[in-house]
Image 1: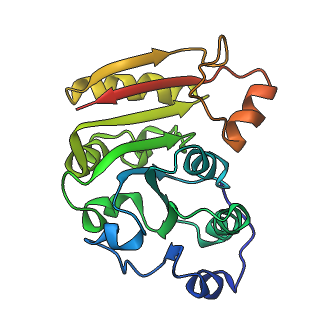
Image 2: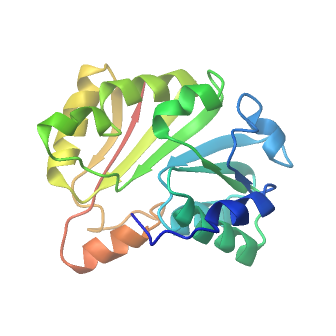
Length: 210
């Protein structure tokens, strides 16, 4: 998701440094970013923040950290955190390729990937967030019983991800090819999800562990 560039975006985020880490201040010390020492779930690619802020509101006993590369998007996420007065959700301006530089090994309880860029061209395979180098990062930062949850409407990316994860030796706990048919109670619709579903696109979800 790309937004119009806001020249003041970085300054805005820095004024809310209690919610947004834009300089990797908490790299290696993520627990210091939060008021309470609780399980940690991360979302790689926040969208406009509906998913992660809803999770945080519904689960005050879990800490949530949204990872996003676009500072303009993070403005809206921070605004939602402030609107809801949430204490257990933060954001970090971070490239997904740098997860192992930010988190310690065995630190994260769950990773969410929601409607990631499919990068459909073969030459861009290494950019897909379910490519083996990213899977290696998730495995490193996740606890032994941690899980990866992945949602998309893109059939090609979903099929690619199933093969990539299987080849990596992951164990599938759920593979749902039509999530909104008998939609599970634990599903929280992202902005993209609502948009694509309204157009008739099937939403796919999988849950897996290493």
